[in-house]
Image (tube, rainbow, N blue to C red):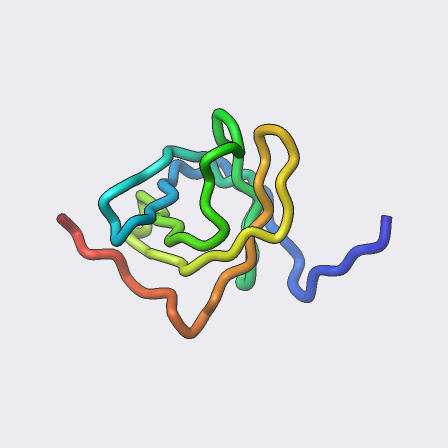
Length: 91
């Protein structure tokens, strides 16, 4: 398989949330690998995960504006919109 990523991903096991509908809806997920421009997420089911959302990394209090690139059963590959990503509010 040809590698198409610009940045190498690092294996990870971080708790996160997929936030959408103006932050009023969320789906829990686990970040399986992470780079500066994307991630692989594991969810209960990829059904219901919107095409665009904010990935909220729980421990880092960081939100990354994300766009789905691929889906495969319980895994979702996303690319980050770096310009729109920000620190999450500590609510």
